[in-house]
Amino acid sequence: MPYIDSDHESVTDREGLRARIPGWGADLDPADRPSVPKERRDLETGAHWTIPPSQPELRPRERSIEHEMLPPVFGTVAPLRGLSGAVRRLAYSRYSEGRAAHWLLLILGDRVDAWESHARSLVERAPDNPIAESGVLGEPRMRPIASRLGNNRADLKHIWMDPLVLAGPVVLLVALAVIRKLKTK
Amino acid sequence: MQAMVYRGPYKIRVEEKDIPKIEHPNDAIVRVTRAAICGSDLHLYHGMMPDTRVGTTFGHEFIGVVHEVGPSVENLRVGDRVMVPFNIYCGTCYFCARGLYSNCHNVNPNATAVGGIYGYSHTCGGYDGGQAEFVRVPLADVGPSIIPDWLHEEDALMLTDALATGYFGAQLGDIAEGDTVVVFGAGPVGLFAARSAWFMGAGRVIVVDHLDYRLEKAKDFAFAEVINFNQLDDIVVELKKQTDWLGADVVIDAVGAEADGNLLQHVSASKLKLQGGSPVALNWAIDSVRKGGTVSVMGAYGPLFSAVKFGDAMNKGLTIRTNQAPAKRQWPRLFEHIQAGHFSPRDIITHRIPLEHIAEGYHMFSSKLDDCIKTVITTEEGA
Image (tube, rainbow over all chains, first blue to last red; front, top):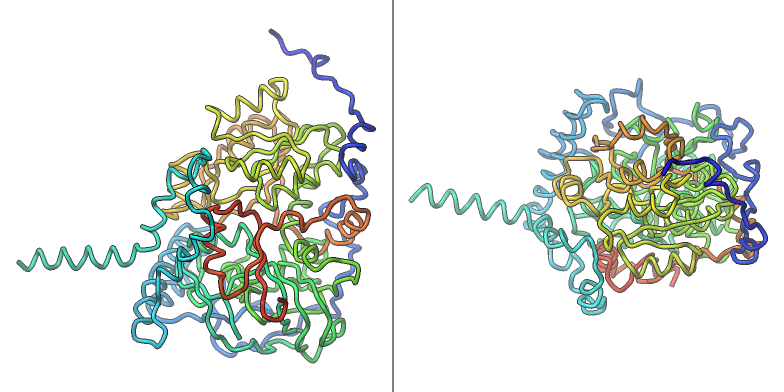
């Protein structure tokens, strides 16, 4: 069957839609849509500067090499430290955002950071408790079985992998220890 | 103060942290009364967003009371009740001057491709977020607004991201009267996008997800037709059938980086972190929209590459429109919709939990337990 333009003509039932759906068509006119057009020069922002005053850089702050200089405002939480800090520093100092190496190094840095932090917590006053930190202890209040089973959820195919991601560093360390022990035998 | 702290993938806890200090003359410190967990927080929680550092506090949806202001703050006073958009922005750079607040160039040293976002990794500027008792709010004369007396605080909270983003996503679709609009994802942003599509004159709105309880919400809250893709062999063929075999006029991707529906895509992105996101919903959008149609993407993806079917997009002559929402730009019109009684944004909230139980809140949201759609975090101050 050929496709014919006139087969697809339809008339909007304006009154029916307005009766059924509160506010139907209120923004039909693009002029009523706040992000149309995309770029507008007439918006009032509350800023009373041309360039925001610069935040003091109290310690060296890493930045993308696609920035000519450090922007005037920035976050200061979790400064670079340890091996993860070295990996992240390399990502920022050597590779632009256009390079896969930049992002892959940052992802590697995240994994190293998690391992380092977990190890560090063991000698601090507040060791990590992966079970409590995973939130699973609240499951009895969350209808865990009824929520998961019988609902034809697509994510059941991979949800079993979540504990592996959670326990990944521990599994890796145990595996390395076992391999080392086997080799020394 | 008490604050949610990231400890690694799938691990968070509440810790005692120092109350943030004024670090810039236009900073404010806000005492948080309500925060929310966003679907995009799950990308951080799952360890997908590059440069998410242990010790960071998440949370880019929050409201509160001004606790302290820096010396150059003119528009806020201590004690003001404020709603804070998830974007941190300066208001005057090349992009802000054009209304592209989410693309501000002056607030994120770590990346140029994305602006500043509260509690959303160092890739988004390295700021702590609002899932805490206090939060630093930079450039306080630009971002926060005083909450109008008539506005319910939970509606104000929804305006800080989820509602503004959903409404913005519908605008990206460039919807014309009578259009058939398909929304992938029945989470908070998808629900708001579907509801907003009607404001713009849609003739049909179809919401696609795999969680039946969310699809029920899409029917009730967004007056949408619904499809569970997991009950079908091929969602693209079903959508073609339902649209005279042409495809939808507009398709909105409100899922983003952790889309289900293709195990290889999901595992390579979400579990192995080898893609910026699992572009299943985006690929379905490209294939189910009509030729010449528009795909709107405000579901969040990471900066690494993703396996997107760009050839189909090119050959079909699609318009693909994207961005993080400039949230505050949406507020005046959304205030009018709420005041007119067109909808009640807080109707999508399913759970309210204290900050001390936030690890369980994340687990519930991540594992989609107890019919969770939107979780609000209450602090002692806001309880």
